[in-house]
Length: 247
Image 1 (spheres, one colour):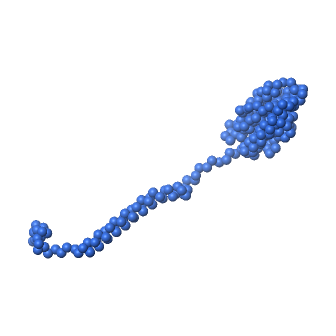
Image 2 (cartoon, helix red, strand yellow):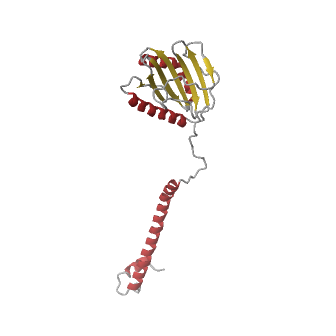
Image 3 (cartoon, one colour):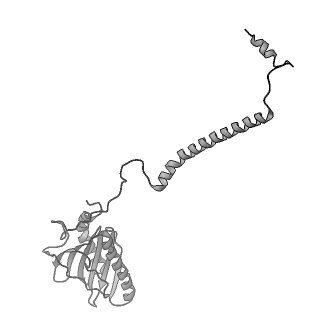
């Protein structure tokens, strides 16, 4: 049996019989090893990029890995009929007459600058009549809140133009601020030398518009406008029934 120590001694023995590899073979093996290491590194890099890129690509294209449908916000279902028992006459003196049609109670100073329920599909009107003046509440439902908003926005622009047309004249219209509802407008027509005044309030909530009016003789326009707003307050409170999130 050969002694391993004898084998180690042969590494420094000039008579060593082990033959070293040629330089060309050493270079060939080194080149092959480098190529293999480079290939393994490249494969590993591609795998990492693929792991990172896959979720990003799915996010960019909107692909989903689960089958749960995305959550969407449905459009509001607008009320299509004025509820039975809606308190349209609330706040008006008695007796009150009601109808399912619109009879304009307002003498408009500027032609075409008044409201009418054009484009609505249901109207109710409550009217209180007295010897000198009177009051009305008119409610109109539109197909959508957007159409009701457009109607009131257009009227607001017409009233502002009317203010400029009547400035300094005997007949005038004054537009007053109002904070009721989603949109609101209050104005007063002083349309005769005798002091006849029509005060009008328009309020939109959802797809509904309320027109409240009061006529007076000789009373200041501001006082008449305050009276129409006082009388309409309980009706406006009930108009939440037509909001996007009904009461």
